[in-house]
Image (tube, rainbow over all chains, first blue to last red; front, side, top):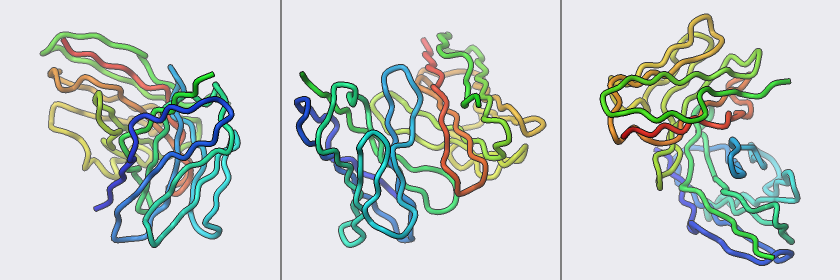
Length: 112
Length: 113
């Protein structure tokens, strides 16, 4: 069975500072990895995904994530955050193909 | 192109009543998924349709939940009778092919009093 752990439930950060949201997963088989974002009163939107190939994945809005197989991690990073990045972020995996298995979510609070 | 839509956006019902949630996937998407997030918990998979067939319903909590996708277009999720623990946000997602990105709707917030 697969599981996903997001180590921080809330991450406060000042505007223009860098941020890293941590995600670790557990799986006995190869998985695809995803980061979704949910802005207030909206649905989940895909930020980026790792299927295979280069372990550094770039997504929308300046976010990137690095797949580390040995550490079973897929941390999300952004070098300089904006107020508009305030949202809840979800890490997810899927043992291909099919259903997504989500972490608990991390709320990013960007302060002016 | 319209995204995934869900109706209603909010529903407040009393314990023992019946509620039906609807999801309209992106046109042409054969794969449709239902997920649920109970307050304070992670988003959990409920079931997966491929066209009108249930491919995986391993996440359905119990037999009070019934999902249908007649004609392989929109889907409904009925809860009958509703219990307090059914409160949460119900998300629907769709994808064209099995390995494609899943696109999510805005969710339906269900409150059972």
